Image (tube, rainbow, N blue to C red; front, side, top):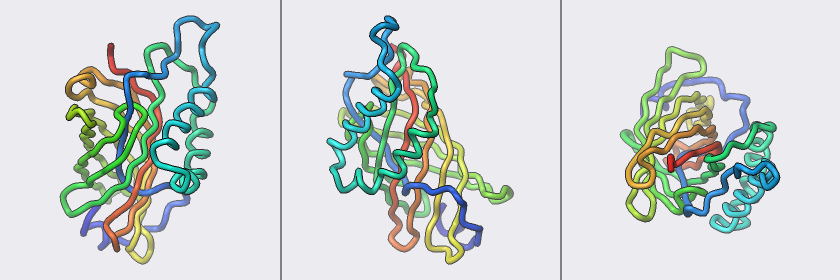
Length: 209
């Protein structure tokens, strides 16, 4: 996603998406679907609780900027079923990058405030090109959560900005994330001028205990 990308001219994707890379954060007060159907929250309830928690962390100005992306994310979830043992995962982060890594600083409803580092590989033989990323998210206690993603990206005709979107899976980690599993979708974008961006992740996670 670094200098090699800048040399490529690719049509800008039609997907309206956020900005470049980061993840996540909160406590073990997880929102899971209870085993008693009579007390099971609706997906709308879970979504609103997570959005409110995100707003408390990032503030009104950021939430106003995120409104279109959050609406898109909720719509893409449809009416998928809640499952006991899983909790909703919502993450927002700002990012910076160099020719080797992507660095993130953000918050999620699972890890609380976090930092993250990502390595990526790009495949330009596809249209749009494919980006495969390995991200290690480190929470405030120093425990790591690993996320593996595959997605697509497009670069603006002037070569100055990138947009990306895709999905991925949690792949364990350390401490309480050792058995973490689940899946997310993401979208974001970044500027090659400032080497910064931001990203939104949303999906489901189980910590395995």
